Image 1 (cartoon, rainbow, N blue to C red):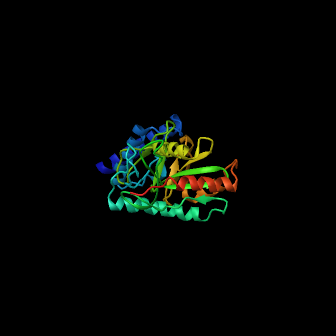
Image 2 (cartoon, one colour; image 1 turned 135 degrees about the horizontal axis):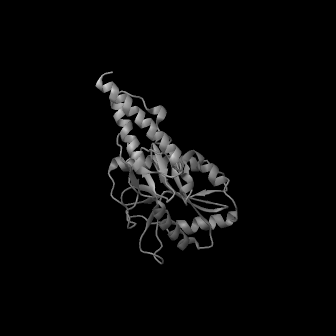
Image 3 (cartoon, rainbow, N blue to C red; image 1 turned 60 degrees about the vertical axis):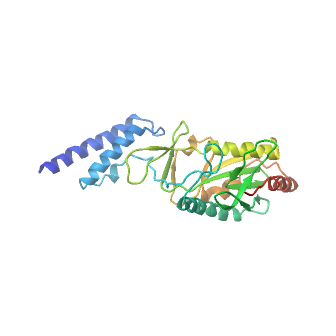
Length: 264
């Protein structure tokens, strides 16, 4: 053995032992960031040594996300975004729009006909009797079950949600895990505004839709709000139960929401 080969053999053995111990000692439903970071660092070293560690890779919750930002800042105002980020998010929303286009006639998809500060063809709602702050919605669907309040994220790669509801990501080419903002607060703001418009007796079904076709998700069950891939969204909406609203009620809700649209 050369010194390099000896080091590679010893290091590979340590990596495999560490990986095996991690799998056996820890609950696979819990994300241990510091351990996964260590494993990822070891994998990078092995890769540089010419080893293929894919067969022993235990970092099952790694993710690669795009650099898209939220449509709103933390204070509810639309956040400034560069054109590339806007286009990336718009592509994801367009993909979901196409899915919603094929819903049965009993469902009403709210039209995106408002003009916002940073983009056109959006849903921008305001209820001045409740709050002087408008909110931008990605998608709203009214059906017999209630109003589906859909927040779309165009994340590529893999997404992990731990048992505390934290969203985590690992950027491509990097080894350190970083936190991704959970959109739950954004969805909550939208729900509260909707309730002020249509009344608190109307069911509102919150949904987070991941629109990128390559997205892989770990820990969906840890999210209080359903996290659904784009290709499963229509099935989720159509088969959601119970159904409580008549067609006349759906039309009335559409009218109430459209009356609260604004343009800037």
